[in-house]
Each structure stands twice: as C-alpha cells, then as structure tokens.
Length: 336
Image (cartoon, rainbow, N blue to C red):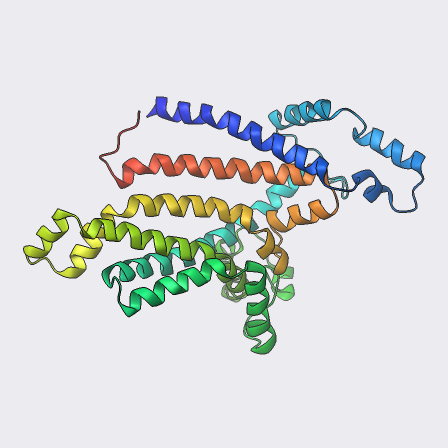
C-alpha cells in the first residue's frame, strides 16, 4: 500500500506541473493588461511601464513562470494585484464556502441519484425507467446559469420562499461568529437554530442548481452498474433460493455495483469544486469560484493562478482517495 501511494503521489507531479503551465500561459493570452487595469484609464504610458516593472510583468515569460513555481513551492501564491491581500489568506477564508456548497450539492445528487438509478435498473424498459432516464438527461442538458436564474425567479422573486443570494442573512451575520467556516456546522455547534435555518435557506437554491449534473451522471452510472450486476449468476441464485427482492437488490446487487458509483461520486465532487464558478457568481456565494471569476475579469494573475492551482491540487488528491477506497469497497482488489 505504501509503495502504491508513493507511486501515485510521484505521478501527480507532472500533472500539477502541466496545470501550472497551462494556467500561467492561458492567463497571459487573455486580452488586456493588468497594469492598465490597476493603474486606471487615465494613467500615462510611463506610469503603466513603471507599474509593469514593479509587478515583474516586463520580464520574459520563462522567468515569470519559474518565479511562480518557486513561490508555489514555498506556499507563496503572491498578493492580489487589485486588493493587495495575500492570495493564501483569501483561500483560507473562502475554501470552506466552496466545499460547503459542493458537499451539499453532492449529498443531494447521491440521495436522489442512487435510488433513481436503482429503480430504473429494476424497472428496466418500463415507464419508470424511461421517466427517470429522461430526467437525468434533462439534468445534464440544462445550462447551470439558466437553471439558477430560473430558480431565483421562481422561489425568491415570485414565491418569496427562499433568499436569492448570499450565504447568510444580514441580521444573522452580524451576531454570528463562525468556528470552522462551514456555516451549517458552526450554527449547530453553537446550538443557534435561527442561524441554522437562515444558513440552510441560503444554501438550498445554489446547492440544487449545482447538483443537477452530478445527479444525472450518478443516476445513469448507478443504472448501468446495477444492470450488469443483476444479470450475474449469484443474483439469480439468490432469487431462486427465495431471498426477498429488497435484500437481493440492496444487500447483494447494490453492494457489488458500488465500485463505479464510488468512482463517479469522487470525480464529480472534484468537478463541482471547479464547476461552481457560475453557481457562485449567480448566487453571490463568497467562495473560490466567484473569487476566481472576479480575478479573471480584473486580470488579477496571482488570484487566478492561486485559485486554480488550489482546486487542481484538491481534485487530484480526491482522485487519489477514490483509488485508495477501491479496496474498501471491493476487498478483491489488490494494489500493485
């Protein structure tokens, strides 16, 4: 196991280097000059040139890239060109918001997607199967930004049931002191039910919006994995012995179909962390995604580079944990 983990960690090095290089170069290809954005439209060419020299933007790209890598090795992501706040401090204060949203969305996707996939497999080619698979196809097809705006208009503007944006209400936020940064957990730890209710109400719409794609994928993968298992000889043997259908489906079939489902859940959770940019922007969610989006608009290189590298590292770590979980899900798997 230790040798396997070491090999996987060693294999992550070129992946992360490729990510840093891609992010670095793509940012430089975006039209616009951060020095002009920072100096303002009325700045003179001399002022812009001086600012570029101060920021190191006048140096060769290769020199800038190696300087960027050297800072990363020291966990120094630099300071924001706009606010001057260290990027690592911004990541510390914002990552919990993105993780809380991603966890809530993934829980919704799992809670609905796995039962939907199981029912679709058990009722193969019947009306329930067709309805559930059509719903999953719809979940993949609907643009996130359109669905988010639609939910805001319906539940926040028209029905006035849920707040349209933010993580917490103004009144609750004034007297609330977070502990971990996960507002739902912190409100429970402080036994503050009014704040808990307020936080959950703010979380519902963005979590529903973000959960549609992973729900659809989890449902379809669950259906496919269950169909493969239900056709196995040991399932027919269990049915022939008179084992109740519920036990056959959930104890025997679903347990042995968990490997691809587990892989899908892990990959989708990692994808949610990077794919939350649109959702966080629509709902004014103060997480990593909306922060990166603002950094792109402002040509704030350190912000975008630091945010993307952070999400990339989390994503590859999640992939590693998914690989390591295979032996727990299926003990027949051995690491080599």
